[in-house]
Length: 184
Length: 254
Image (cartoon, rainbow over all chains, first blue to last red; front, side):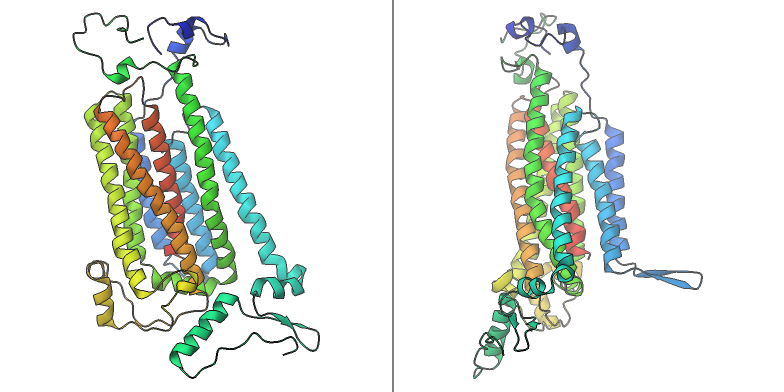
């Protein structure tokens, strides 16, 4: 970029760009209005997210379409992904950058999808794959095997501790429950 | 290497630092140096995204297990109006830091400083709202993570709510009403606290580095030929914004 001849310009180990090419290399100047419109769209999408979270269903003719919690999450996340893409492409100028930055960002997103996707695939199907592990692992603390050999669903340790603490505070004479013995 | 560039022989002022800037001797030119710095910044941002991915993963699993509890806890403990106000402020700050970089690219120091200052104000607004109107009342009411959760079973009366929430209640009309705690409220609040506190810490770090960029800008270190660290501060700030774009609907709107 310097107009001053210098050592590192004349001794170019790569020999891929002549000095003139290096000087005319494209440097993107951030434009005002496109960025302003991206900002405006981001605000509009935020409003859309808030509004959509309060739409619990709508009617098409005589048919009511009910939007449950999972649908709301999917809608909100779709909008959030569009917003994140706008920020990354325009504000973080991936659109104008060397493609390598986009490769890094894309690889990261892929890793996040693997991370959350595989974890959810595990926790969501654990009961189907192995009911015994489901009772032991998911419920934590007090799950146990009953006298008839079946596994009894127990409470999480924090939950059990809270219930005990609450019972003691509201009923001073209360003795905290013990962890049930096997066969209880 | 601090000689005048050719063609500026008539210049009768001292050159600003950004005009005198020379890339490190191991770089072919300043653009190569900046591209490499940006790639390094993107690799750092990748680790940041993966850090928050842990919180998002925990969120996803517990939301899958306890969807109704999640909905009730989100509606009761969090006020979407506060979250929405902070979202707007962060989006605005992202836009202004883009304009600050435009100021550097077009050699307009005033534009750069004004926009960095607005960004700083937005970040301060975000943190003050977060600490003063979310964390402090939550701390007082015992809406704390995990085993520290002491809110249990307590029904907040209307008058009491006003005393707790104070000014923000009168602005945002928080309706505490009566609420019976659910079994997994403390887990929702654990994820709320760890993810927003980590994000808030990033906002604080952002304020420090933006302040540093303002100091460098005021001393003439950024101009069309050199604004690498300003660019990287901007990239960092946008990632903080993107993370909030996901946190806001997940925590406040489910």
